Length: 190
Length: 229
Image 1 (tube, rainbow over the protein chains, first blue to last red):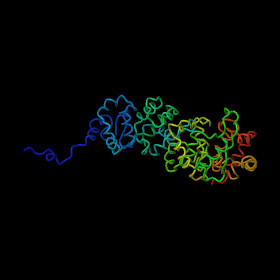
Image 2 (cartoon, one colour):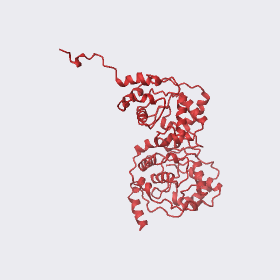
Image 3 (cartoon, helix red, strand yellow):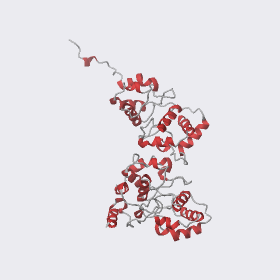
Image 4 (cartoon, rainbow over the protein chains, first blue to last red):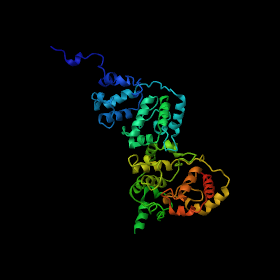
């Protein structure tokens, strides 16, 4: 007589399929602990879960496009989004690295006060003084300079257009290339 | 008949219900701005005025605005962004809806006040939140070298509408001036006199159209020193 399948289950639970997704698929770029080491790929560790959920849904539904990300999307199902977001939100972010302290100081002024002449708001209002974000706005702290710069340029060109009310598109239009580099440098050290 | 309906509908607006002063806003052609009627009651302005503003929700919606207007709407001493804390809700609603409708010229503000960013309810919420914020005594003041004359000008030309202490009149959409930053007062007074603001009350334009720069400085300085509360 065959043993019922339920009785044969191992004492240890099988690996969570979503965690497996993170550690086998996402890890290639973002790393299993979300602390990506390649500057073009964003760090996800400690990112706001609400932001990750929205971005994943936007990727799956075509509101955000990225040619590097696209081949991997077929392995992400809509039902996995919430858990996958929670997984990366729960990872511990590593320390950020500032490469150019002088540039970072110029970036701090923009981050905290904006640019009054050009009508750029301070980033800290939404993304918070230490860049941790909140349930409505993403964490920026410690992000790679190259990724932040690329996203700002994509917002400015309209290549990325999934921001609330077009706010990031309008703000990025008001920033110079040098200001974008500066603020990205400051964010990297938060 | 139209005027009477306007009065009745204004009195029914919750945001105005507690105000002792009431009555129709002045209606007059503003010169040089396409002949629009000052403070025409229509569209989303009416919607926002009629909505019950939720200050707690407004605090969250105002998050974005704090990037320029600072925490609690304190504004900036250098006048680049006005203090909004303690401003009357109807005034805030009028200004926001005027800016997004293009009636008030403010290109910096336009992207942040668009209909895809905030709706009429959000505007009512923000106004309720800001109106309840304390007016603190740390606003920017003028140089203080011509205050006496500024006070005389204020008493003669401004106090009738804005009140002896600059508290404005919510029901008539006259802004509170007390606690505002000197450099912002001066900037807007210049814009109003020069016909550059876009949505100025014609009576206001009339009151200061003969003012010299020195007059504007003196009266703005006086106003910046009114008791903030």
